Length: 237
Image 1 (cartoon, rainbow, N blue to C red):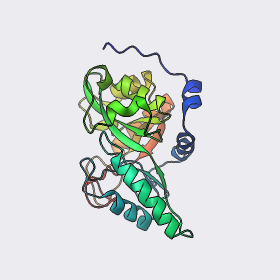
Image 2 (cartoon, helix red, strand yellow):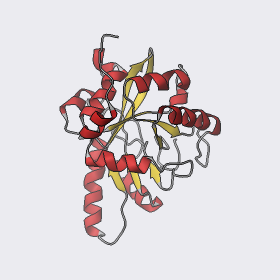
Image 3 (cartoon, rainbow, N blue to C red):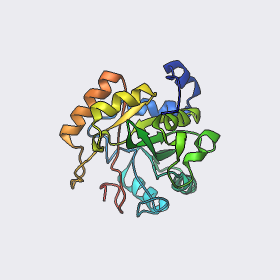
C-alpha cells in the first residue's frame, strides 16, 4: 500500500474533533445491547443511496419510535442527512415542546483493509470539509483514497469519528481486521449488529461477544445500528 500515514495520537484526534463528535463519544460510551433500535440507531439508509425510506419519512419514524439519537449513513453521500436535518429543524419549530432526537452527520464509505473491502462509518464530521469531498460523490473512491487508512484520516480531518461497520461480516475475520483498523486510528466498531436479520431486531450474540471483547482490548468505542435498507427503522430489510 502506497499510503503512508502516521498513527494519530489520541490528543491530536481530540483536538480536531467537532463539538458534535465529542458529544457523540459520550453517548457511545454508554451503548449496550439494549440501546438499539428504540433509543439509538447509528446505521441506516435512505433513497439517497440504497435504502427505501425518504429522509423525511425516516425522521417521522425516528420521532414516533422515540429515538434519542441517530445518524443516517448513506453510501458515499450526505444528501439524505442534509434533507433530514432541514426537515427536523422545521418540525422542531412547529413542535417546540416535543422532544426531538439528536441527528449527527453520517456516511458509509468503502475502503480497502488487508486486501478486503470494508465499510467505514463516519460520524459527527463537518460535511463541507475538503478532506471528505472525494468520498461524497455517490461512489467509492479509487487509488490511495480507497485505502482504509485514507478514509479514516479524511474523517478525522473533518472532525469526525471513524467506526468499522459490521466487523464480523467480511471475508477477513474480525480478529484480523480490527487490529489493523486500530493501527490506522479507527475510533470504534459496530459491536451490536444483527447479522442474520432477525425479526424482531436483536444483535447477534456470538459476533457481539467477539467484537465487544476486541473493542475492550483495543480501547474502542462501540456503536449499534439496524443497517436499515427497507421501510422500517426497526429492521434491516
